[in-house]
Every structure is written in structure tokens, then in C-alpha cells.
Image: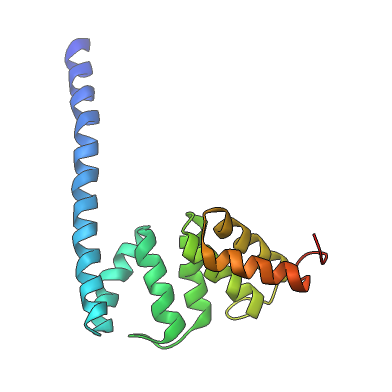
Length: 151
């Protein structure tokens, strides 16, 4: 009996990566459909694909929703909602999201202006090699924003 239970547990544990792989493939297909809609300018259809993916933790879809809300493409422009999606992607290590979140804090768009927080996000993205963040970090250092000048 114990051997049968062990065999069933083994089969169940082996089946889970296959289920995850299947879900991942479905997410990739939906993401690609959303991206195709975005490219052809059909932002409403792109939203239909990106939003459920983003709600389920798909980082690129979260970043795309940021872009949609930030620029008012397929949705009303809303910096607070844009930052919500941007933060989710940034917290997962998405370098472009980290750089853009730094810009939001530097400019005070959708969040209170906070140069120290901007500097922190720029550093995270710059450490990943994001050229925009490296530039933004240099500007912050040059003007002493978020840190003592010259450090």
C-alpha cells in the first residue's frame, strides 16, 4: 500500500511541470496575440490579452499594461494605475520597469516625488546593464538628487 501511495505521489509530482509548461505555452500564445494586436494598433484587443496575463503575474504583460495606462492607449491615461502595473514588473526584476519606476518617482507622476526611491530603482536597473538607467543614475549623481552630490 505504501509503495502504491509513493508511486502515485511520484506521478503527481512529475505531472505538475507538464501542467505548468502547458499553462506557460498558453500564456505565451496569448501574449503573442496581444502583442500582435498592439502592433497593428488594436489596443482594446491587446488589453483583453494582456490584462488576465498580468493579473496572473506575467511580467511582460504587466509592463505592457503600464505602457497602455501611461500613454492612454486602449484605456484612459492614468498614472496611478500605470505605476501599479509598473511596480509589479519592477519588483520581479524587469530592468526597463525598474528604470521607468525610477523616472516616475523622479518626476512625481502617479507617485509622490521621491528622489531617494528614484535613485534606488535606477541603481537596480543600472546593475542589470540598462543603459537608460545608467544615464539616469549619472544625472541623479551629477545634480545630487537623492544622494549627497559627488558620492
